[in-house]
Image (cartoon, rainbow, N blue to C red; front, side, top):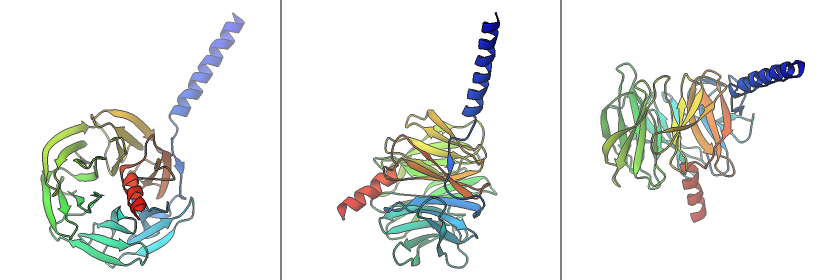
Amino acid sequence: MKLLRYSYISFCVGALFFSSLTSLAQTSDFSPEHEFTQNCEGPAVDPEGNVYAVNYIMDGTIAQIPRRNKASIFLTLPKGSTGNGIRFGNASTFYVADFTGHNVLKVDLKSKQVSVHCNEPKMNQPNDLAINKNGHIFCSDPNWKEGTGQVWHVSPEGKARIVAPNMGTTNGIDLSPDEKILYVNESVQRNVWAFDLAADGTLSNKRLLHKFEDGGMDGMRCDAKGNLYITRHGKGEVAVVSPEGKVIKTITTKGKSVSNICFGGKKGRTCYITLQDRGCLETFHADAPGREWVMMKAFMEKK
């Protein structure tokens, strides 16, 4: 009986220990806490593996992080501009959603020259971007006060038009690996929508992919298998949603206000996430490389 009692106690202790482990964060720190402002956002990775994120030390800046714990100011945006989402269009150019200037900005990686790719005063607040291999940009544009939003298409020449009006608070946005589907989430309404995407940027066949019952959503990225990695702002999670709309995995983060995500690393399977409450970046490993990382690799192979 004594042996059985001890075995039972050991089992209970082990179960409690395992339970506590499963509740721990599945991420690790990539940068020190509180280096970024509460608008910490927009991670992106260049072909060399450098990580970029907006609003380092003060709003209006973009940081470059060549390796863990080594962030520095890469550039400061023009007066009146504040970055949110960042996306690479090719190996030497990235675009920035400028939510205070109503712009999509274009940045030359080598010269650090910043230019206005698109200015549209009718934009509420350019939030996040998705871009295809031909340079067509899709921009989420929420109106937080009214609880509404829309999606803009910005042509390679910088001309903007609304392609998805009358939506909720549009936020995270990305393309499927074959670039035939555009995914957009609504933070307040907790919906993830899918649209069929035509070559000219026109959207059709809007359909609900997934609806979360609680928490918020922010940035999201698609992996090479078509799964969406969705940051759950306020929940301290990254949810992985399959192309069929099923949550297949949840990654627990250290911070609660997870604002955005990107893929990088040598194999494209390292995820970098921005945390607004902690003012830093965390990292974890994914099961597949990111769609954008694969696109960037293809650009480099053509050189």
